[in-house]
Image (cartoon, rainbow, N blue to C red; front, side, top):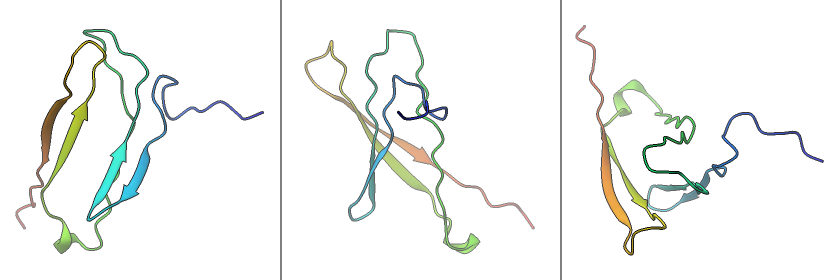
Amino acid sequence: MRAPRLDFPSNVSDPRIRRTSSYNVDYHVERVKHGDIEELGKLIVHFGTPDSVKNFAIDYVIRPANLPEPVRGTLHVLFERDAA
C-alpha cells in the first residue's frame, strides 16, 4: 500500500518529463468543469548561473472532451534583471 500523495491533487497526474531538444512536460487532468481551476503544482526551472537566465516560451496543448480539436497556445516566461 502506498501513502497518499500530498503535493498534487488526485485529479492531476504526476508530470511526465521527457528530454527532447529541450524538455517536454506532460500532465493529465482527469476532468475539470467549466469555470473551475485545477492547479498543476509548481514548475521549477534551474539555470546554471545568473548570466544563463533567459526568457523562454512554454507551448501548451489542451484536449478538452467537448471540442473536436485541441486548443494550442504559448506562455511566455520573461525575466527582468534588477538594476544594480
